[in-house]
Length: 114
Length: 110
Image 1 (cartoon, rainbow over the protein chains, first blue to last red):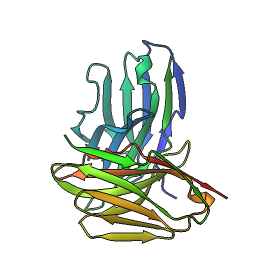
Image 2 (image 1 turned 60 degrees about the horizontal axis):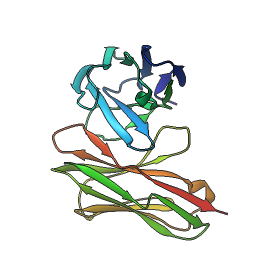
Image 3 (image 1 turned 120 degrees about the horizontal axis):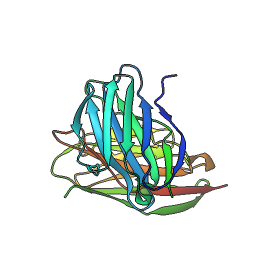
């Protein structure tokens, strides 16, 4: 049963600390998305990659957020320095190549910045 | 500005009481409209894709429809296990950018 995996599932940190979240997309999927979900804003697209290349990161605060795909099996989202307003659930999703629009979401990383 | 609005924010139904959820959108060019289901503590789970006005998709007690301005998710004779948050999203033409609404929290009472 192919699934998107994310680590860690929960993270509590103090303001100013660096946070790294990891995602393993479904094997063979070539498009990876990072989303942030809060009660107020809902699900917001932060960035997405196709064939490991960043296509759009306009949803990310550029001064503190960065997203990379070191290889086809790993996507990372880094926040440095973290702030309390970054507290949210961060989801990774992946999609197969071709004309399909079906995204498969991971279980999310719940981040709390104190 | 591209936007997706879902209503109502929350809905409580008795088991067997049919209803509809609404998703209205304004986008510069619609590539597709999608419905997802999200259970507490989990990631969204794909339900339907609709690409053109007049299109309909069905799955068990759920039926999704699309017009040029909105989509409806009809729930027929719901059961308690249908309780979840239902999210609507659109993809704009020429991009892989997906814009999600804030969802409708559905509670079905036994």
